[in-house]
Image (cartoon, rainbow, N blue to C red; front, side):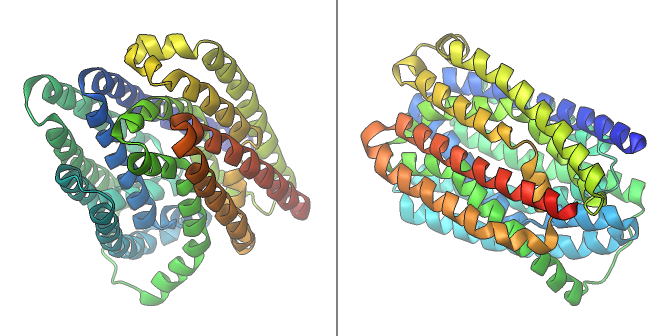
Length: 416
């Protein structure tokens, strides 16, 4: 158990380090873009990546989590799972590519926005291969390699995009194109390292295994899709109901909250293989969950107090006074409360995703949360703009956190 704890800590440090580099560069990039692009163009940038976020969830279809869970329990399955899972995810990437571009075509009259979404979504294809490689590394609890590659890509792409921002016309076009090119570079680097470290050998597609993976990923995929709606549908709805300027104002606090989530998501990623291994060992599972939950609550509370008290100064200093005029600081205050509420349940999502046979029971709750989010946004965005979207996020965070706490306590009782 002590050795396992050291592995989790080591992997958390590597993942957190890589994600902090990624989110620091993304955060700095967001500051530069928010300051040096017109607010409506910045709103387009946020909208494009929200579409890409949706498409990535559909393309992955929850399969990387299945890879981690199953391969962590039997490392000999790595080769078999890599080729079959990659085949499935490439098929889903093609479906996701057509779906999000069809939706964008129907939703918007802006030809430039539709073209940029079309180009940005090309990154789905190298992205799923990178996700499969990363999942195999996670199953082996060797997360330092993908972490180092992600750090390199983040830093390199940051400087390229900053150069674009200050030297070329059609800035948004070249920023999107750069993102696509770096997604291919990331795929090449991580695949080469996986091939060298795990000794990959080509496997023919096993359709019965593909069907089994899909069957297992079905519940995970739907839970993540509904969770994705809770995280990003407000931006899509703002873009159609309130305009790109409001998306720009709202995108600033949303991106800031994403940055603050890094230590928590890093720990969750590191915990999944360990929770999968100890799922049938009640005492070990409870210890892992309780220790992590205390960390979530303690750190989340400190962050929330600081951000809530100094939201106006933070927005003004980092992004400029024009975002204060757009109410971004008040949206940040509401969103940071939602952030804290999400932390009360600790890594409940990791435990729920490890349930396997009982995972289907969470789908109706996730569906309810997504419908509630859409309904509240429809009701409040026309009246209150970005504050309405923030309030919808807060209410949904309360509901979903209560459900996760209820479910995870049930799982821990059953395990006992």
